[in-house]
Image 1: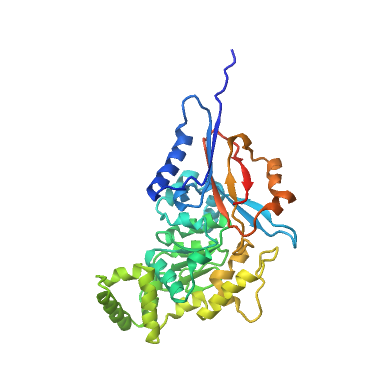
Image 2: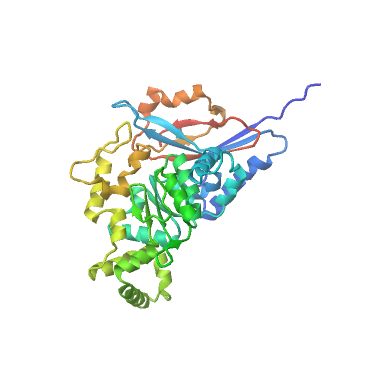
Amino acid sequence: MQTRSLPGLIIGIEEPELYQHSDRQRHLATTLQQLTERGIEGVGNIQVIYSTHSPLMIDYQGFNQLRIFRKTKVDGDKPKETKITLASLRIVAALVETAKELKEYSISDGSLQQRLISMTPWMNEGFFAKLVVIVEGIRDRALVYGYATFKGVDFDREGISVIPCSGKDHMAEAVSIFKSLEIPQYAIWDSDFDSAKGTGEGEDANRNIQRCYACTPESFPNKITDDFACVSPNLELEFKKEIGEANFSKTLQEYSEANQLGKGTYVMENPIHVSQLLSIFKNKGLESKTLQAIFGEDSNQIQEAIRIDRRFPRSAQGESSLRPGVGFASQKLFCRRAKTTGRGVGHLRLTITFPLASLYSMTQSSLSAFRSPALRTSLNSRMMAIPIVFQTSKECTSYHYGTIIND
C-alpha cells in the first residue's frame, strides 16, 4: 500500500514587526524559526518567508537565510534590474579560509556559526546599511560615530552603520559576511604594536584582515587606505596622543564633572559625549590627524562627497562619476561603496507580499519575472533595499517567494 506524504506548508508574512514592541519582535522571530525546526503535527515541510525593516527580526548567525533585493543599474539608459543577493555558509567559510590561509573545507558550517556567537547584535543592523564601518569595540564605535557627528555628517541619514565586532579576531568573519552579501564595508582596527618591545599582539588577525582586501599583509601595519585603516598602537591611544594626554585628561575630567557623568572613562563609550568633547578640543585648536585622515581633509569635503554621491549616477562598472576638483582620498567612507556594488544612495526598496495562493518555486524561469520590462518600469526607483528572510525545514530543497508590489 502506497503511503501518502504529508502536505507542506508555506507561511508568508509582510513586515511581521509592525505594531510589536522590540522584545515581541525578537520573540516572534524566534518562534517562526522554531516553527520550521520543530514542525506541526500532520504537516510535512514548513517554510516561513517574511520581509522586514527591523534588525530585531533577523539574526546575523543566520545570514545564510537572508535574501536581499536591490534595484541596480546594469546597462546605460535601460531600466534598473532587480538583483537578489544571498550568501551561503560555504561561501563565507571559503572567504575566511582564504583570509586565514587555511585549507579548503577546513572550516565547517558548525564551526563558522560557533565563531559568530561572540559577535555583537549590532551586526544585524549592517544588513540594512549602504555602507558598514567595522570596528573592534564600542569605544572605537563612539570615536568614529562621534567624529562624524562633530563634522556634521549624519551617518543614520546616509545609511552608514558603525558596527563593533568584539575584537579584531572576529573581523575577518564580519568582513566576509558583508562582502558575500555585496554590502560595502570599511574596516578600522588597532595594530596593537608595542614600539618599546618591538613587537605586539594580534599579528595573525592583522594579516587576516588585510588579506580580506587582497593586499599584501604586514604584521603590524600603520596605514589608512581606501578599504581599511589600521592604527598603531590603537585608535584611542593615538587620539589621546594627538590631542595631548594632559589636555585630554583635564578636559575629560572637567566635562565629566560639569555634566555629572561620574567616571570619565565611560564618557568615551558614548558618541554624543565624544562629539561634544571634540568640539571643546576644536575650540582649543586641537584635533586628531588620524581621524581627519580617515574621514578626509575637512567637513566641507565630506559634505561635498555625500552631495556628489547623490547627484552623480554610478556607471555600469560601479565607479562613481565625481565632479572634478574633489579628491577621492577625502571621500573614503562615502564614495568607496561604488567600487563594490555599483549602487548609490537611491537604490530600490522592494515590498514583498506573500498570498499563499500565489507562491511558487524560485526557479530560473520564475526569476525571469523579476527582469521583465513591464515589471521593471512599474517599480518605484526611489525606494530602498530590503532583506527577505527565508526560514525552512532542513528537508526543503527549494525556496519560494511572492509578488513584488509598490509600497
